[in-house]
Image 1 (cartoon, one colour):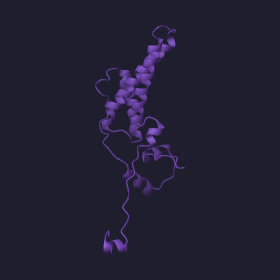
Image 2 (image 1 turned 120 degrees about the horizontal axis):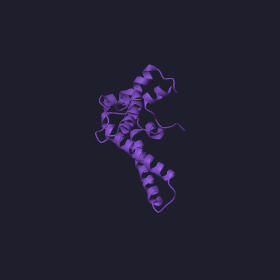
Image 3 (image 1 turned 180 degrees about the vertical axis):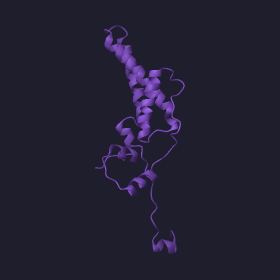
Image 4 (image 1 turned 45 degrees about the vertical axis):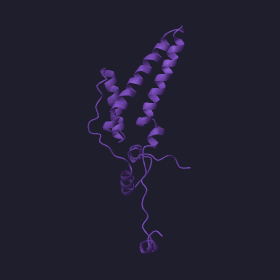
Length: 152
């Protein structure tokens, strides 16, 4: 069984298939294209570490052509959730089990879910990247009968 369709830029980037230039152009014409000219960290990312993480993700996503200007807010939230998850996890590892332990684990789980959802919507994991190409249906040329008599 064939796997899910991958964006052509991802296929070319990974170098896993040998496609002709015509096949690459055909696949590109079937994919949705949006602007990616001003991808900048959102204003709520005031911390330099968060901005750096945003820029790292944005660079990687832009290099394979699956980020646009519309994704900056979602990517910013993902960076925040990931940063908060790391802080909570570090706190859990460093501290002994106490009365707040269960609440911290629940918080860690919620942050993980939120980070996972934003990662999924941005194509930051392989399964979500594979679902990003949307094939267009091609019209079949009309047969002589259809040309002559139309749709009876």
